[in-house]
Amino acid sequence: MGLSESIIPGVSRAIEGLDVDVLRAAIRAEYTQVASDPAQGFHFHTGRRLAGLLGYDETWFDGVPEDTVASFAGTGNPFSLGSLGVGEHVVDVGCGAGIDSLIAARMVGASGTVVGVDMTPAMLGRARESARLGGFTNVHFHQGLGESLPVTDGWADVVISNGVLNLLPDKFAALQEMARVVRPGGRLQVGDILVQKDVGNKARRDIDLWKS
Image (cartoon, rainbow, N blue to C red):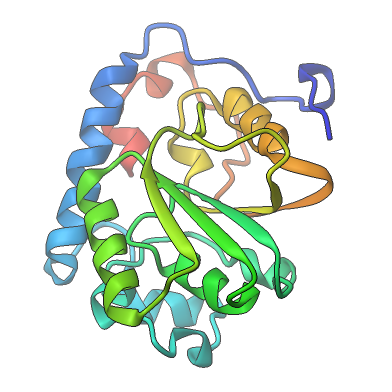
């Protein structure tokens, strides 16, 4: 599975003038709050109510600790694109508190494996604790960036991601990484948001708008 810039119109490299380190720090700070106090209220929906709005099946939460459900902050439903098969290898890019990773772990069963990757330590802490409390032994969480995934080439049958691409400054690099880690004939199941009109250069460098 390959990607070239010529077949992905509108997807570009990191934005000129955008301080990527400042952006990532701001995003980490925001999602640290989601992990530690999801009930405080944000400009986006969270938790079980959000999952319902996105079409999540309540039975998917069986065995998933409520703290992880409460810290859910996705923008779509990657499982609406198809269930995962028993025994499959799955990478969850931007796994957050781990709700999609844990749902995936239950779908693929003991013979499958899920790797969740996130850049926010507080979210990873929540995900690891929830996996421990829920008795999930086939899911592993690692700190990393969507643009440089800590996963071997062609390891995954499926790459899932939920509400993450819109936060990444270099979306093309992230898509290249997804293509690198998925096996030939594998699948990308991505839930995210789209902007349907061009965003000016000044707005693209506005850190607050990235988080809005």
